[in-house]
Image (cartoon, rainbow, N blue to C red; front, side, top):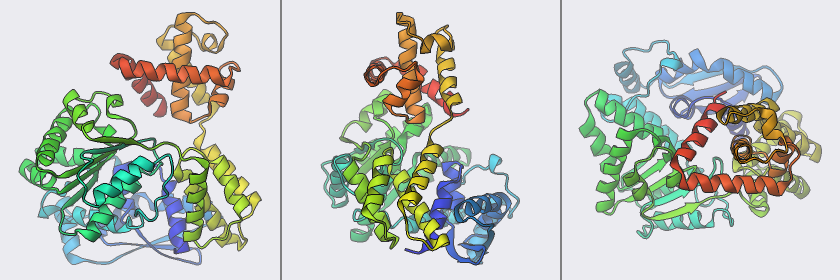
Length: 462
């Protein structure tokens, strides 16, 4: 694998931008070469080049300098495809300077939006490394992996297939693998693979620009419909209704549907009961945090793909320390590879320790966030933060304390032991009980669940 591509992937992982901006402006970029201290990239659309130069180049420079250790210039090349440029001008009224805060994604519902279709095609080509061969199977994902393979082979036993689990565990990889396998073996099938935001924006724009017929023809004409991150349909009633109708149309004609989410349907806030029942009709397969053996296998595969020689004990150390998700593991190897390229030194245990420390520090919010959670929960229950941390065990205080522990766990990913220390030095079993208690309440009480969801959203946006 090209080393500059790996550096580019690491840079992309550091970008703090919306999913829509990432898919529209960043994913179409092709890394060309690192010529001295100049990073050269290529895009196909002049409009994309314009947006990148106006809004992203300075960010790219900062992250590349952080990764490589020296100042980097960025040069963006563009193949002047006249038809594509005309489509961009037609869709945008010229090639203006773009303010990303005002950006509204374009729909790809008809020929007038050829540019966006081209971007989606470029994105699909760039994701062809996500196959079943490159997916590491383990106990944590065995059911989801087997079901996706069956669907890709044409079996109709799992329709719909609903895969859920925390971010970074491989859900999108599996969707891409299904898409790629079907494309290879049955290219005549019409596969629609979108994130929920794209479906939602396409639907909104179809109403805004009077293209509802084109929208329905596109999505209801799919032989295979793959929708990633359906939790984002939460609270969007009209979009839920349209997804419900699309589901019924496709399912009644035997078309395959796969959804992914970070949670099961019953835990998605403000989800129509009829749509929830449809999401739960087929097989529901969860993906959990990979066990040590799977984490180690992922590291071994990533190292081999990079042609990076890493000692077994170094990989075992990383697998033992990074437990939350696959992105952390792959990010660690990518960063070690980048450091090795720059320093011309093979990966060492000291290098691994430094990388792991940096990744863990990036993913653990400061203590002020934990205090903020405690204060927010305390205010809801008319308490003080000190009371929640205290040894008091009244019903009101205990309930607030359990909720605060749960929210801290969801936002920070801290272990039960670490959370216990933040709440007055409580032991591991107390935190485990609190998390279990809150999960049970969430499942049976919708109002309680809404309160927790709103609290998590508010704290996460601070």
